[in-house]
Image 1 (tube, rainbow, N blue to C red):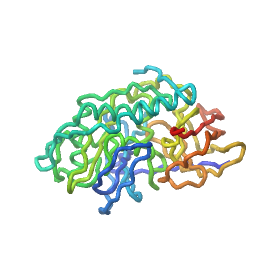
Image 2: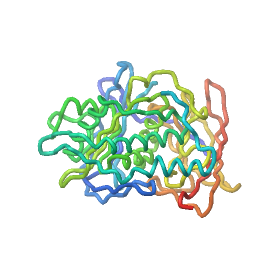
Image 3: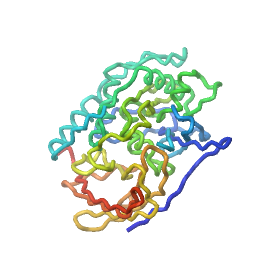
Image 4: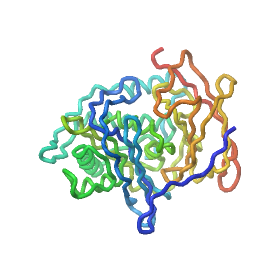
Length: 380
């Protein structure tokens, strides 16, 4: 058993505490399409670290947000976070074949679609991307949400896409990320700045590769997996994507606007009471990441105890400090002494992992949860 301690990381400005985060490789790279689910590891040069930035919540003046930035071996990470706080029930793979079919159809089938970006760094034109390309990005988002058991009917709004595209251009043009980009930055626009304040940001990756990068959430300062929590936030119905491919001298970039008008609404029905990644049931190993997570709205994980086993044998578990404020309250751990940036080991056969979580306080009462994740190789 491992016990969690509650830790809050915050940045204070004029009495306002802001939460945020973004995921990004640290320098310009050309990222190839994902073929087996793991985002590419670009070769990057190192830029000077970006200063932590602030972003205001989109609708409530009383809401507070913070910016967190991390340099990993390959990526700089940034992500939006709100401290407070459609609805079609997702279809769930009932068995291994259904899980495999969903992976092949909704995760892999579109990864050769070209971006066909129409913009320009030299004229600061955000341009647009091919509708089929954007559809692929959307399918990647809804794949993760469907497998996780949250409403998987996300749509892109035209307004959010415009904000995101302008934000992605700013990040790419400056080879850097910032939720509040200064007006002196190349290709700065008010529209792009607005988008940056409400988006996950990725540099060195774009399109569906960036979505998978957000879900993996590697890096020492991303132990709270804030990017993943926003992608799987049950209330969200609308997002927006902005994507810039690598161009000589300019890094690839993605901005994913994750705040919409539904974020403060009541929580819709989900398959389980909780939202876990990887979730209960059959999950292809390329989308299983070192950081496992368990989210429950309003839960107190201060004194939680967690254990994990494989084929009846206990596994070592490293529990991350609890950080609230990014989507739903979430517990995060890494099993088997993996590094946070590693790929999940390819299983020789379908492998069942049992997760036991105890002493989760829900409405002041202790609760326990047990579920099984069956990790499989989609190639056989």
